[in-house]
Length: 64
Image (cartoon, rainbow, N blue to C red):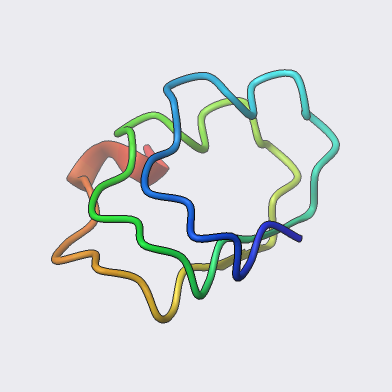
């Protein structure tokens, strides 16, 4: 859980080594944008929680 940590940014590739990650909670932070390829290596991800952030939109290629 990374919720409620006042994160302002997430670096490209920061989760790449977590290939078995199923749930990623980034809610209740201060995120304004996400890297376009944040989920590329997260092939088992089923839950991505982003509520209560400052995101205007998600990159179109985020889930390609």
